[in-house]
Image 1 (cartoon, helix red, strand yellow):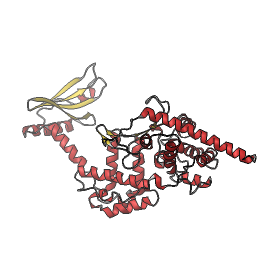
Image 2 (spheres, rainbow, N blue to C red):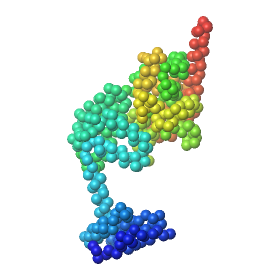
Image 3 (spheres, helix red, strand yellow):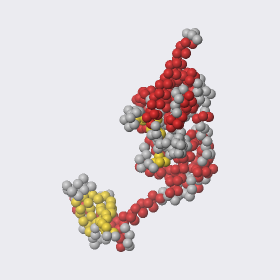
Image 4 (cartoon, one colour):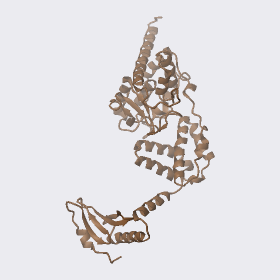
Length: 427
């Protein structure tokens, strides 16, 4: 080892940066690269299979000359054995990564941190981890992932389903991603969530109470616009529900980063619901470019509501941020409780806005069913069985959303007129 050593500690400490990188040789291909910024890097230049290569050995003084020389000698020994030091280092790193603990929580956190590094938003990853911390980790977090069996998964899903069926359905998918990621790393042989497919039955919108009479829907709109019992966040959530008619969880968990209120990106104000949140089976699909999100054009009435709300919650990730549960959106019972207070319990549900829109828009506005399916975010196929993508008929959908909002304004005004007439004893 000492046969090649040339650089003294004094020389290393006193090495000054120049206009260009300076190499201070220590012998045998090992050198200290002094950068113009003043940073000092240990490097080893070598040839493997006739090609020049460089191996990084650390930063001085965090890595001393003695440590760098030891790494250098180890790399030379690999060359003598016919191995590429750079390739061997990559293998070692991979083995170390795969040597992580095999409990479910550690693997789940590693997966979602890798997604964060790959480009997923910090807010989205945080929301996934929060779901797991609340509903999964307390039950199987410390269990070796290879020991977890379907009945354990089902018990978790049933527990969540009793509170929020849609959340349970989504949670199965999240857990499945963890198992499949672990499978790719040799931690588990199969994904037990596959056996749970269909075990959680998310009710469809048509199964929920919904108002389909234009007159009664107008009465509801009047009540929503005058709702004063709740906070501003709840009022805005109520008022947006009939305008955008998306699934309650999609609206309630909406994030500011999903909205383009100025319309610069799409030529019109737009809500771009991330693919991980966009609805039930068939609403999102894998294409050649990856997962697709769901586009919701925003009428001027919806933009006005969101702009009024932004000063209150714009500093938080969630549009409908809960004041009682910091870091979370409003609870899934917010709309249900409001409809109860307003006297529409049994007539209307949070999911019912979707069914109301389908019926009224098709019957009263003569909107094509295919266009409604696209906007409500159901899977729609053409005569050849091909799925439409998220931008299909976007111009028509933009026009429809504004027409729908204007129609609702008309229903509201007619309902107010009827109320005035009743109060005056007319009719």
